[in-house]
Image (cartoon, rainbow, N blue to C red):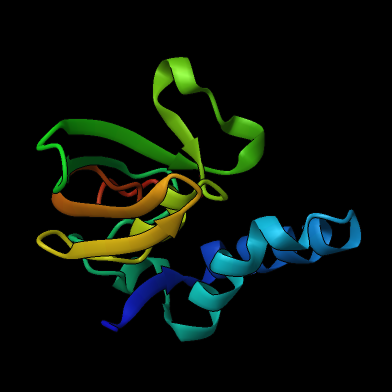
Length: 134
């Protein structure tokens, strides 16, 4: 597996999210995210590469099975809104791409089968835009 990158702020918030979910009986929903946190390289917001998917990034993905292209924003559960394509970090696709880089091919198990995506482009990354406090 490739190294994934998380900002210190994202790591802290996501770690807290995992703990809250576990206390509220949602441990199964955060197992994948927990594994990603364990393998992440944690860096300062100012040091995260601009081609890495961070929280609140708007990302263009290509589904390698269907060929469909979609744009999603990876958000915290409270900000999720499918109509706006804001996908919770607890959703399999968002967990899978978090911390990965443009050009990476991602495979991730999901209830409907194996997800296979390519990260084509990051249209907006908060850190690259100087938005360090989202």
